[in-house]
Amino acid sequence: EAGVTQSPTHLIKTRGQQATLRCSPISGHTSVYWYQQALGLGLQFLLWYDEGEERNRGNFPPRFSGRQFPNYSSELNVNALELEDSALYLCASSLSRGSYEQYFGPGTRLTVT
Amino acid sequence: GEDVEQSLFLSVREGDSSVINCTYTDSSSTYLYWYKQEPGAGLQLLTYIFSNMDMKQDQRLTVLLNKKDKHLSLRIADTQTGDSAIYFCAHYNFNKFYFGSGTKLNVKP
Image 1: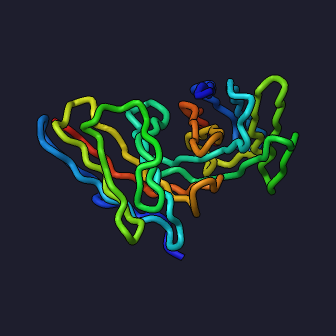
Image 2: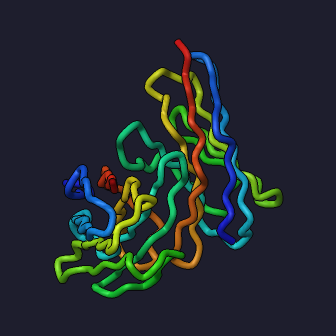
């Protein structure tokens, strides 16, 4: 069974541009979580989607947004990129809302220059 | 209820036991987890414990939970160089997961 996949692996953008990151959950999982892991820091919760709807978001500005598609894959968009947005962005999926196990993808390394 | 604290570094010799500690503030957490992150990779779920348990053993891994002190630990027996990684403690409550900053385990041959 395939795990959580993310694309691209690496993404280099310049300040002010927009970045789009993609995530495909494990087959059968309906919940997708996004986290930001800045260098040397822990995971900061960004967004949670379940059954196509945004269920919760972390303490991030509105230029961080996303969506979940009918096939439960998800997209994270970061507008007006700033240097401090450089980080590893991790996606995780879980079986459903209320499921207490989540499984992570390998991440997308975003570098903003 | 979001604070999860871990020490930043731990260094052990190959073959010794490693103990990684974590404290959290939210007493209503239902599940507590340990994840492993190798360089350049995502997080791998190692093990988890339900909050009404004191201990869980899984091969070389032993998780101890002291709910009164809100203290979680992960013991790795017979630590190997392949165990070198960052270990994250996390807890789950009300459909949200809260993570610590991670403990970097360095295993010396």
